[in-house]
Length: 142
Image (cartoon, rainbow, N blue to C red; front, side):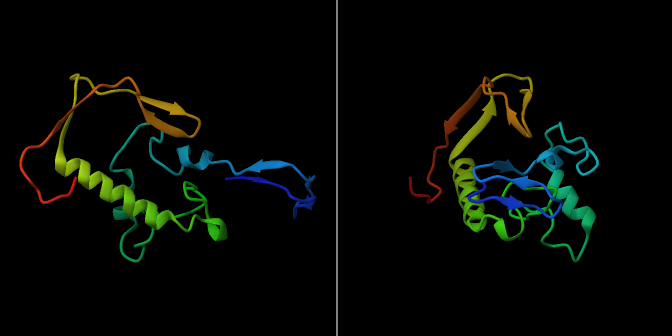
């Protein structure tokens, strides 16, 4: 989250931010080993296991649209992104469409490396995929 002070502000700890100061919230907790087990390694089941370990009564925790001080992907508190639910549903629809209409596999036998960029983890952009449109009609439009 990036913000710019539109007028001089004094924070509760006495720090003064002049007008025009640019501030950002650190997302370092998203890669904190005390919060996430082995955070520098991609784990597609990380949040599923977190939800399972939290047990009953924590239905809202560790979901894609959940916000917390440990996961600021959609902001947090009163500044949390109101469109995160819509965005999550759109991503799911697109993913379902791609998985139902196409066959996917890695072109090479080896697993591509992940690249850490700031606090994000990205797949190797040079990784090669083989994609083939499936035959037959699943009743999906275009």
